[in-house]
Length: 65
Image (cartoon, rainbow, N blue to C red; front, side):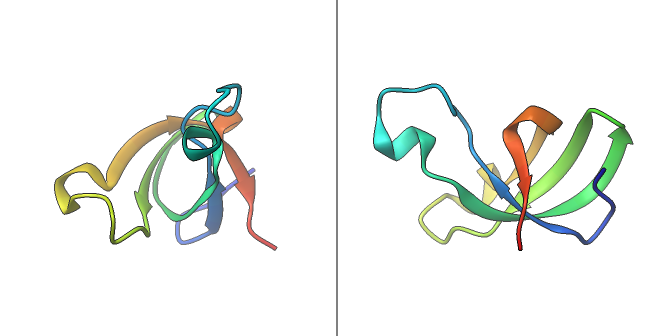
């Protein structure tokens, strides 16, 4: 599905009623844990640097085309 160094769109809460929480953010895959979980780095300067590395599920990611 996704591999290390792939750029993706990450949505923290895709089912949220808040537009801010369901707005996709650009991220890069750092590590593939299994086919459904990944470590990513969120490319958003508004997020504190200590919160940019996240463990996420595949359902929260979409390919960046």
